[in-house]
Length: 447
Image 1 (cartoon, helix red, strand yellow):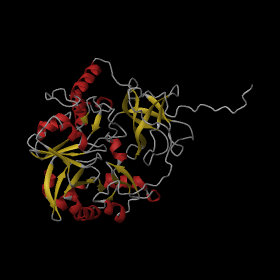
Image 2 (tube, helix red, strand yellow; image 1 turned 60 degrees about the horizontal axis):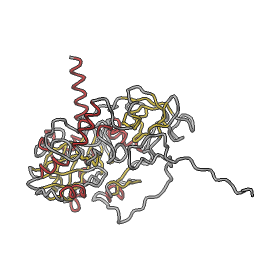
Image 3 (tube, one colour; image 1 turned 90 degrees about the vertical axis):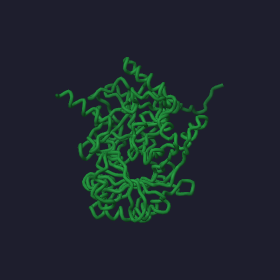
Image 4 (tube, one colour; image 1 turned 135 degrees about the horizontal axis):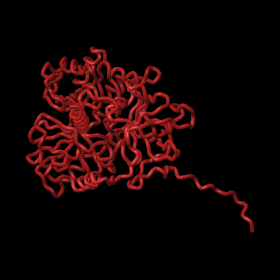
């Protein structure tokens, strides 16, 4: 008896099996679904920050994402009015205000605060003096990056984790179960804003006085704005000169601080903008969740300097990370993929990527990697990106192809050429420890 029923084709694997993600428990979703044009639901399940009304109702933020379970403005200037590139111009040429209340502040306070913090971060917490801060990472026992916060130390017995987009408070509280450090761990009512750009210091002088000019990079200062207590730091997510203002008792004071800050920014020719990912990519600043996550080792994403070889104290992940370093030094790289910088062709990428765009070998066309953070750099006059590619093919100048959406491709459906480039693509006003070490090494080599 013949079977005349229609045959069903087996669909191709939707997640690009030629990209080797075998060392991940949960592979990245590499299917190219694009932007389906959906609407974001605003409900009480996701928190509105103390700045929500100012950003969305008064300043006209037209879109949002959810970051740390808080609504976050990600577009101030409409595309037809210049969009993110107009916001970029304000950042690099004048001054900008960012609503970053999504950076929840997790406080560790008590007589054992230093010991506890030293146990959960890879860098040495004992080297952070009161009224200073440091960029740090926390890893799990497998060496995966759980969070990469700015760590502030406003007092001898007190630290604030200004966190990136992953839950950290419950992890810290869980770590202390059974360890019994004499600390209290909780989120506090503090909301930060960033003032970024070449005129940011002028704005801060207007707001809190000349003393702010004496704050070193990652230094802190107590101050008052409009009668409200704030903590000021010289930090930021832009690669430009910048400061952050942490508003204490934020649910009461946020708007009283916001109004004079925004007024000063506007007086200096600036504006409120969304976080400038085009500039942070150029600076090589990473974004947790897209460039790295809990299954990513610091050795894969240019954060080896976060794993000191002289920290005597134990910390979570130390044994694994030290073994990874030994393997790498012995020439046995223990990961399939590694992050690189790419310069790539195509039309200027002027907005967020809705997918991890595919990276192919230039000779065979085989898809072997993916882009995590792409954007157009007006400074460099080219598209740039951070991408994960096979660890054995990361030399500067290595050629690849990137599969861009048709709106950015030179020809619809055809990949554009790409080349591995130095990271950072563009120097920061305040170089990171990694940048500074590289600059010192280059200086030593020329002397």
